[in-house]
Length: 493
Image (cartoon, rainbow, N blue to C red; front, side, top):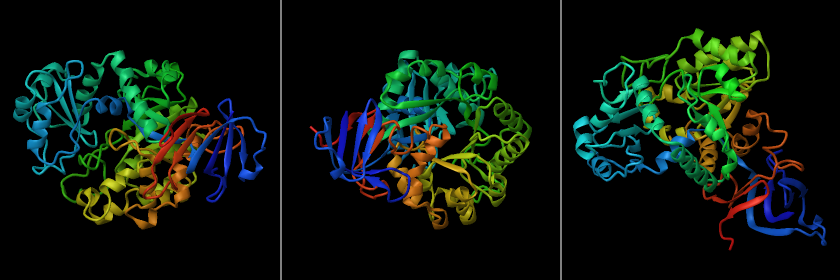
């Protein structure tokens, strides 16, 4: 048994409900002590002093691309570059991984020249091996000539229009990832597990698959889950419901794209982009496709999970969910992943449904606010319809917290802070509501709130240990307890 003391153990039952001590046995919470004086003097247990920390049920990130994030953590990060010269210099020193060169996190809006490196510049930096350079949002990329020759393009010939967007970007990315062997795949997840743990996470939902029928390394990950310190929750990111059933998955989909991203001008809008008035983005599939997909998953008792960013895409998927739930009421939390730009019509469609929205508060922290990327591309009115968390919660949508890592860092505390400080004050969550995104609500998403998400006697002893309140500006992760075991505690010798 382990007795954790000298901390504020936040049960997540109510904003001010907390305990002074927690007793663990066999990986579960055996007893919670409201006051330290209740602890029996003759209790025989290992005592662990948490030095005044705030302790929460283990944080969960409900939307990541952890293979990509783990892989890219071993590769070249271009996030610090502010000019093409810096990008080219960094690429010239890239270290190959399995005979390939990966670079990621390039934000063209931070680059002085406002663009990707062109083909000539990439070939000069990396002439001999295939190279991919991914934009920060993951929805467009650039490759060099060696990659153009190496990728077996579905069209039979290399694309002429660069950089790559939509299907071509996904095709290039899929080929690069398919070239990583099983040892490399597991090494990427090992790296992802380490990063997640240091971020204070005990559980991470991760997307695995090509978005169509190939679940890629889903089985490899599923069969090696015990290898990692954090719990990975794998999503077969495919639209083939029968294949998901064969895999034994309770869910199907993930970032199945109904549209693209705001930064790449591919998110589907109801009005033209403010800075590209000739474009409203693109709906990638029609309503019938999504209805058939969600209806089949619903009939089989699987969660259907779809990416939607722009308000036209969110309306499309919300309309599908309304139709499916009305035809066959089931308490399945089908997911509108991101649910970024929400119209009043979408709120009406979602009202009272058991739908879920794994949202990314960091998106608003990075790109919201006056003069930010949202306003540049969408205008002031469009920006105000982004990240409508309070409105979605009032409509009864189950909001959960995610990062979309590798797009933004694994950082639940940053997500909590961002959700309480949204650029639209009317849509901000309270600190308690924001913390529930990563605890109670995350457990509800996987129907595991009977054993996770709260600090309750008999529940799993997974704890995220923080130096102060979860929403605090200066609060930082101090440690993690997984299944009753203290995996790390900063400052403890």
